[in-house]
Image 1 (tube, rainbow, N blue to C red):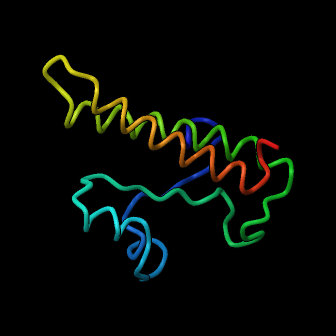
Image 2: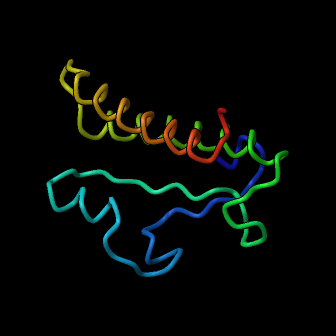
Length: 110
């Protein structure tokens, strides 16, 4: 993600890099046996919160796209081997639906 626009990102679990909380979709996913769950935070460094300035919206989406592609590749390479890609397609669809939903909610694609 950093390679896209030079913005530094930190990887880790939410309690390690943000703060402790419970009741998130990651908690729910683990409880039902989903082995991979990811949270994306926007590129803001505690200056604008969830209201990025207009000039940062496109770069944030491009960085999230690069991150999602990396996650899809990682999950595919780690789990879905042996000539079948059906699981990777399912994971890809889930990730893209999540990204597009958050973009529509925030007005990025409207």
